Image 1: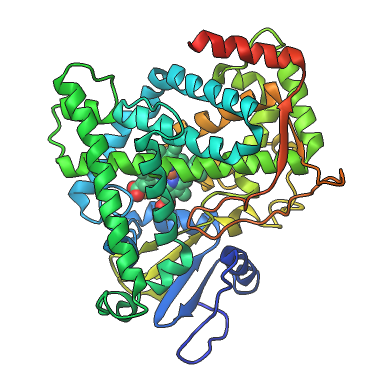
Image 2 (image 1 turned 90 degrees about the vertical axis):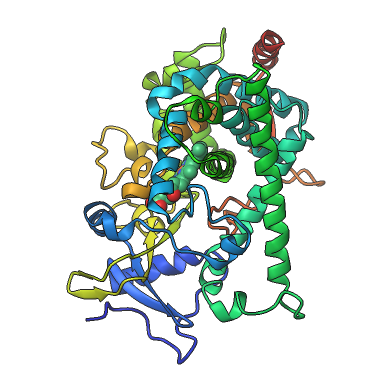
Length: 474
Ligand code: HEM
């Protein structure tokens, strides 16, 4: 049998809104249940909306549900190799081992001081130029991941490798947006149209993206190999891979390392920007979080990740941020075998969309689900079935290999910003407060659309503590 689903228009099938399509997918789930199907042009899309269904398919039946969709646009753009879109099982195994070797939970304490240095310098940039907060947020994970992946210490905002990685991240976001995902599945649209045909601009675009991606990937990789040869390398994922006994292919190392930079960038950029938006929209939450820091850490020092256990409210806030707006609302997979689920036939090669958003914004599980309420996590047993720190990072063999590090990075940024700054609504020329709308862009990794806000030190004393920490970095 075929799963239920919304009525289809001949040829076209179903039309998804361009803006925040995951919300339309969530609303369909209320009507058609945990597992339903839609059609976009000639592609059937099986949508999975509950943790139970996603666990059954991606964990228990992982051998059939662990493949990413070979996307035309990223393929033409040279983004299909490495780890993220790798389909070759041998290379994928190598790539995942490489990431675990580099940033697995046991490796993390080696990066803790690097991470803290990056976060303190980021606070310094916020202090100097708060209106440019989006630029500072973007640069933070990119420069940090360049150091962890390659041992490369960037100089400033105009650092050529930071700029190159930033461009790659932006191109990737466009190439992999959900609508591009779906439309680019059509061979007719993408692969068979010569690039010189007017209107086939996407091909020229893809070719330019590919050149850019190859260029920056090769340059940063060469930086590490040269520093190893000159004995100046600092330990990094790439240096460890090159020095290990495992026979990694160069191609796997170079592409996977760059995807750690790009995969680690937009996701954490999104979560940190969502945090800033939340602080603007929910000042009472910010006050409670700051009170917790003041009580536990005091004013003599900045907080550290090791304080996490004593900061349950901020821990709940992080969990709630990933529930309120997960940076990746849906993840597409393709099946590698025919399968039957709950009596429904899913042919090999089907497009399966795992809908985290429907799981995390489920009103039956989370009362008042659209509202940010860190309190909902206090004093309750947080099981896997409801935990955003599990759900928002994906399921089974393709789950995020960096989730422990991602949590550490975002938590470290949150406690530092809360300790030093007040984040509040900006005012317009008439002095009236501007309330940002809660709208997000439509990339496969989505972030709040730009909004103005005021970020200023909580007091002269707080600014001094930061200055001392900045001095100590010199
Ligand atoms: C808040 C931060 C983050 C979130 C919410 C997040 C979420 C995700 C999700 C949902 C997936 C797809 C899982 C699936 O298919 O089921 C994924 C994959 C991935 N993530 Fe993350 N991620 C985050 C941070 C990071 C960071 C910091 C890195 C840096 C190394 C990273 C590297 C990757 C890679 C390489 C993959 C692809 C794995 C594969 O295809 O096998 N992520 N992430």
